[in-house]
Image 1: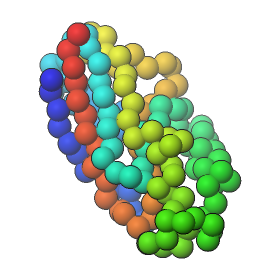
Image 2: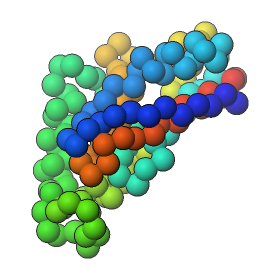
Image 3: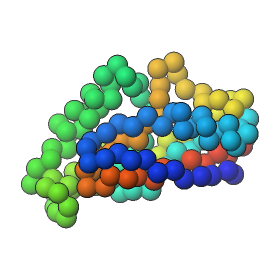
Length: 136
């Protein structure tokens, strides 16, 4: 298995950050053929999603998460900025991983799909993302 970890600066705002290019670079560096790419974020307040970006879906996802997980005082988990407890529930809806098939060294994504880091935690401006390639 080949693996590496990168850092992504998300800043102090909610973000859907496209990781697709970083996935391609990692697979090229790994000399990938057929196999499986695992993308993992080792944080309790972030997730990985496969979705369309650039046509509003990324902002729609953040809006839906704000509606499902309001940033208010209802959360029992209370450290950090107000409403931060919602960020700890996020990985139950947007898991901290994605597994993507790799065929002939290329991600087997659909036409409009991208691999994205989803981060609603404004208290943590830098995230780690681990890529692991398992040859088939």
